[in-house]
Length: 297
Image 1 (spheres, one colour):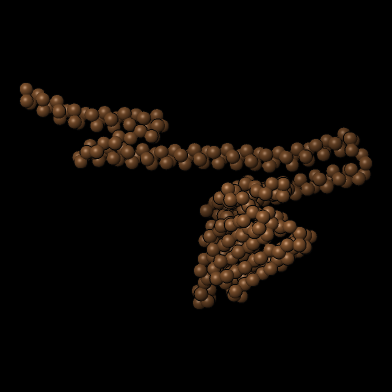
Image 2 (cartoon, helix red, strand yellow; image 1 turned 135 degrees about the horizontal axis):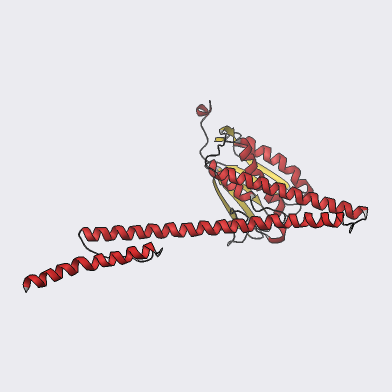
């Protein structure tokens, strides 16, 4: 009787946790990764249960990441479909009106032609932005880096942007604490990134306002005094197709800041945005350490 009782106790001690692990494994096979063994034993069975629980955690994280990626893919397709549909619809409607002789007045015909040209230019910009973003997100796509004086890039961009700001009488004030700040980078891509920031600042700045571009130590900032960005929108400003500031940004593709984010990451530059609505918005670039003169030879 004693042997029988002991054998039953030992059998129950082994079979209960094994049955629990079997049930958890079956749940995992059905894509339910929330179930856990929760077996606390200081033996091989306990170690096996802990391993199974760890596997469940990793499978749950992978499943959540997969769902997030799938949602991003769906959002991307929905956004790009919307962005493409609008100009295509306008161009088609204009062409049908011209072909069917609904519009015959010379001035109206010219207006329709100009509208179609504007929509075509928007499509071209959108496609180019998508190609740029796709290339930059591909780690196999090389960026030709060489020692570049970032101060030269900044001055180049400010000169180009001053012409853009003339239409709104916007002044761009440049302040550099050093004439030389050498980093390893692609001049063209760095220029593209800074032009995106200045273009946005000009777009959202009121007339006769001022934009400040300042390099202080390893910190480069671009500050405008426009309408600003709401605090709840700041975490998303560098997402693809994310647009802010309502009607002011109707002409944007929603890809510029996403492209700038990829360029900054490929150059090891930290990128953030701060904003006080109605007062100021600053794009802050935390630059990598400047190369020493000897390392550029």
